[in-house]
Image 1: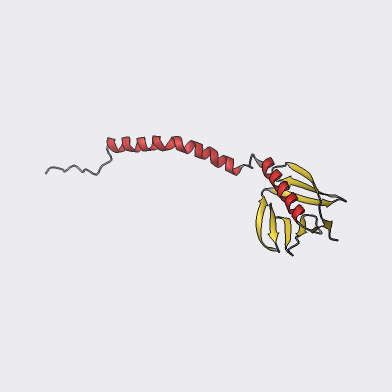
Image 2 (image 1 turned 180 degrees about the vertical axis):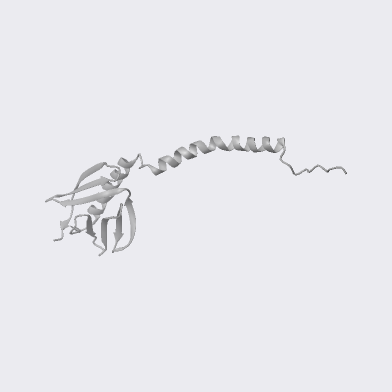
Amino acid sequence: MLKKESSRGFTLVSVLISLSILLTILPTLAPLLVQMNHIRQYPENEQATVSTFFHLLQLELNQGKEYRLKSSATGIYIHESSNRSILIEQYKENVRRRMNLTGHEILLFNVKDIRFQNNPETIHVSLQMIGGNNYERTLYKLQSVKE
């Protein structure tokens, strides 16, 4: 009896096709893996992000009619003329903005600590980031302080 050869075997053509697909995919995986490594690290544009946060905080202070600091000095309440209250505070490793104590909008990530200090004509804000960088900014008040 003659044995019939199977056409379902793994042939040299199959190996060459698999190898060509693999060699096509590998060059695109290397940059992807490098990007994945950068995602895990703290952003290189941290300074720009913090600067934007300070700018937004100054805008909120300018638009508010009065403000007061939280008792723990880790947040600030800003009261607007439209009877809206804005709270900017640390929440876990983020700084968030809350309107009338509902919901939240993340303003800054990777924050280890934030402190507000009330001075006669300014508010001093100190940020310590998880990566170890420290940032400080003095913001000028254009409204009255609520005691």
